[in-house]
Length: 126
Image (cartoon, rainbow, N blue to C red; front, side, top):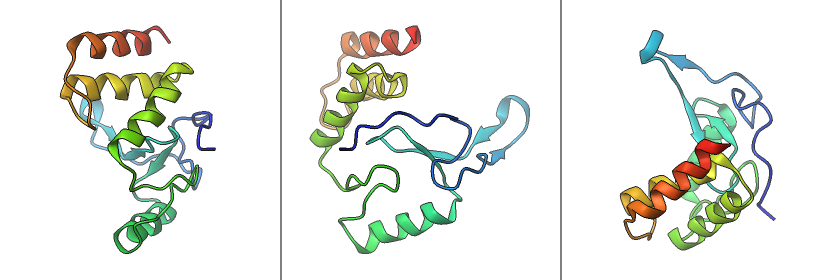
C-alpha cells in the first residue's frame, strides 16, 4: 500500500489532471507543483482538491495524501523509508530527493556527500 508508480504525465496534476500553472518567463519560469514524497505524484498548489487537503492537515493530523492515502504527518524515519523503497525500485524522483536529504542532512539522515553523490548519480542515469 502506498507504493505506486509515478504520474504518467509529469506536467499534469495527479488530482485534477490540469497542466501546472507556469509563473515567470523564459529561464525564470517555474511550475507551481507539490511533490508527494510518499508516492511521487505531483499536484498543483492551486488545485482546489489540494487546497482542501492542505486545510485538513491543519485541523486533522491524520489527513491522507490524496494520491496514495498515506498519512501526511508521518515521522521523518517513515518518510525516508518510503523514499528508499521508491529509490530502490528505480524511481529517479525518489533517488534525487534522497540525494538532497543526504546532502542537507535532513529528515533524520546524517549528512553524507558519498551517499548524496551515489543517489544523484543513480537519478541522473535514468
